[in-house]
Length: 238
Image (cartoon, rainbow, N blue to C red):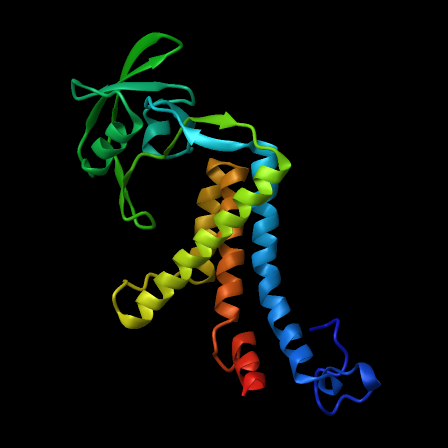
């Protein structure tokens, strides 16, 4: 609202440019614009990431794309590029098989067989429970294959992605209000912790968190709650 003079009724310095001197429909646009810009920012970030980095799709085999420092996998000596081929003597062909083994082994020692530059190696890992993900994890991210995306494609795909994220968040929020979805919220400290963990994985993960937070902020601000933009908009609508 800093770009709009006369936001308060007793502020007469702006004259005819004052916010309160404008028709209701124009004031409604001003109120909604701030919240919508958060969603526009997310759209621009998604499009930029797609155009610069392409579409990242996990490869079929259980190859490590990155290993988070100080986590079980790193402590066990695993490195980026390692390919998991077996756990406790059972053959592992896909990332999904590897992930399922880790999820179901909280606190249990896993004997890992892996390949590094074609050489077979072994190590032991004890997955640890992650409160944020609510499952056992070892601190690794799957390797991905990159598919280049043109500018028009990135703009189209970004729009679809923003719509999907927005729809999912609104549905989840409605579920929380109705009691059908567990309300698992994080305050400033929790958000800072999530961003800190994402930073250990890489800048792309931080961007993904920024995108989600930006869309979330836009949606929350549009809720018809008195202290928020949505509440002000609802008052103008009446």
